[in-house]
Image 1 (cartoon, one colour):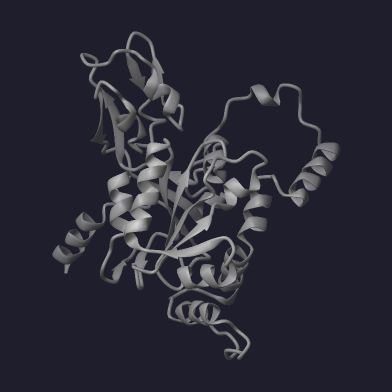
Image 2: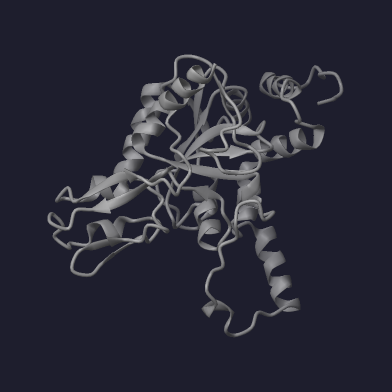
Length: 317
């Protein structure tokens, strides 16, 4: 990436972002500007994207006035677009990870460089797992929750992992972000899992085309889950699917009530829609009978499990 020389007024985190951008193949000036805007003003960026920001609401009112929707539009089934169809999901996406996998990502004690993980992150771009100073972690107030009029609490649940991202966020959002340890990050993950929220490892082209954050998401606030429900493939399944042991199921409905993806129904016993299930594991933890387990689903992209990926990379030389 060709950019002007570093001006003395730039903050250290911004300089570090530029320096890392220069070392990233295929990452251009427009990518960096996009990444800067996204990271510098995430509440405006996300607020517009989820339709809660005043600018988005005004634009929607104008759009509806110019092109009113047919009366039957709300009854039309959602058509899920495929990955690679040119949606925002192609370059900005989350990978569902279990609590164990998410905890491992915030517990790394060495720098990691795993590139082109298409079998895990099945998108055309932004699929590298590169961790610089992985013990540098910031927790940020969730832009999705902060955009909602009645958000789920607490707000401080988005984990920014590694450099240059953690320093940039801490530098530009001192009132909404704070530095935390790996142990504190693990505690946040465990608490969010207990609340029934889903862990997503996020990747974005403008964020150096790689992993940069773990978001802890609820279907009522999360913009990516909103897009997923609308047919935009912003989320990739964990690689697992929930399976029910009908001999243990009491048909209590606890799993169905807690499923963020509406993938479970109860008719005599719990039944899992394997296409809708994203393999987050929330239902497994919630079932009082222990009737649910996660099983590997070969139809879905491989799990984002760091140790297994590192072993495979080492074996491949």
